[in-house]
Image (cartoon, rainbow, N blue to C red):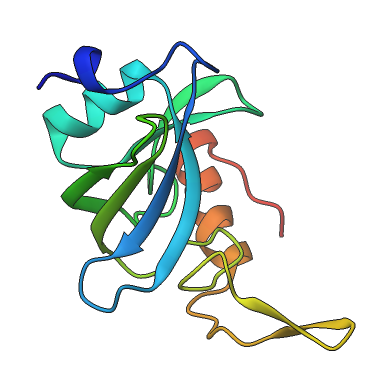
Length: 137
């Protein structure tokens, strides 16, 4: 079945996508796709999402290089959510953690339980300098 037949973009125009590591089954992030992001993902094999804050399609890893390669895709019973199993390059979280779900509630406090993979200032500063020739030192 084609996505027009099976996926229901009509409810909210965006479909939530749970992203899970294909090897470990760790949940890496939650993103949103519109029809265009899904089409780009399927045609390239790299995860694309719709940024609600920037109001545009973005390739996961376009700034950091930490791409996600689609391996399997599942739709839920209501046809309005997706589960993407991916090969994650380095880290999924822009704050430097492998997963965006790196904090756990313990009692009444949130505790960092995830492993930090990189320092965001170093990765994103480097990208900005390369893109715009900036230096903030």
